[in-house]
Length: 334
Image (tube, rainbow, N blue to C red):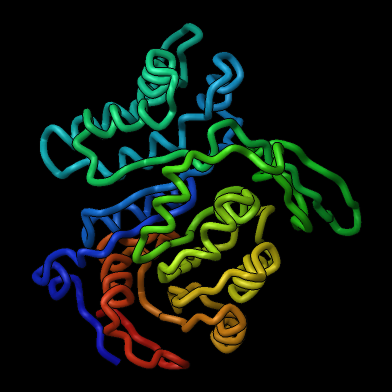
């Protein structure tokens, strides 16, 4: 199997592919930091279900979309210049005061202010992207905030939890997840971006609160199923306490199929050090039409974080078709 190391793909330049990445939080941020190395035509479609922390407070007080995940996506796309890096730090800065602004991310307030001024979430995010010199576009998954509700099984005790922040920490296995409203309004620019993409990338991230919600929005689900784009799934490097702590790597793929049985994938990218049963993962991926790409995409310190350069190399290979016949072949970065 052929692969490129970090130096190889960097010397070759950008892929020229149009890419759409879907997700939220730190998982989407990791994907965007990798993708910005290999394409200048990049769109992030971000979940809008956060109801905790600074985002939750602004969502309640101002009746707006939760800005936190959108802020993180924008910060991940900042250019590597003094201007871009400075604005990245400004966006991520948490205020420390003895008053009501304590704990707010400064970027959240900036986004909320532009939304109030322009009365258009998409236009407001475009202005922030211009200010940051962002290498890409950030769009909200829906025009209105979404609420996530989950049914859980805690050793036989069945109960329901409402709200992303509560679902993320609730004990037990998630058995079913829903969104409210069930059919949120989606901006036309979102479905258009998916339709025109060369590649659509899902994951990594909190499976039931960042990845699966995209499958539950009818307009986005339809766009993902009907697009001519290739589709890639990036798997997590660790299980998430509460949400997925009893799920195998293959189970993550099967859950995606449960909520989107009509979705076909081309590639599933996994780190072999985080894959408990490679044969099981291959079988689950093949059920969605995908080949498995095993790469070391974890950071060198062994933490459960994706290394932007290693992940970029794996994605670049997938985009450019350098993988050949994947099947059961394993590939590694040095």
